[in-house]
Length: 183
Image 1 (cartoon, one colour):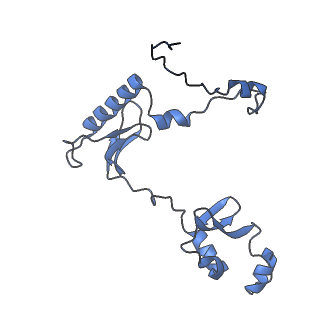
Image 2: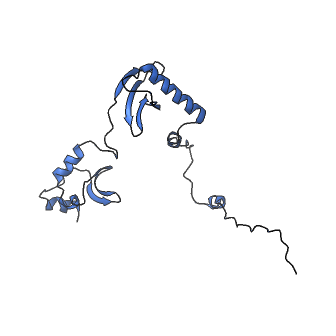
Image 3: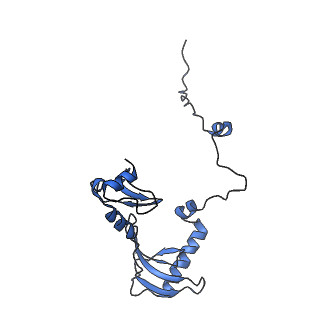
């Protein structure tokens, strides 16, 4: 059934929007797709019962992430004089933390939201920056930075060179017992 037939069955004469829209049941459940934008449906029953008006209403709402909409900051402390960025306190998955938009620093056990000052926040951020300078960035930050592609480079393909680089299986050697065979 084409999308034109679907519109005709629902009582519409022609598609309302020129963007190709579809309802699909994917690996993680049912969802709506319009161009590159997709939205999750609440149940598989909606695959057969959703109307165009309901679909448009779903698209009118902001897109929800896995953990929901981002939480607002708990407290705004002021601007960092060094970077001129706003320093705020947020509540995350692993507790409260201070961030300037680039560096995040977890609050220590003795720190409370009410007693936290801009000076203490800057001290925590400076400690985190020093730790990153000494130990390297966190694994997530290191993973995000991709190698720069030179002009003319293409994606690697499976060639003789790649096959040669594959690790060969090593045959396990039997340990010598030290005993000589008697004849």
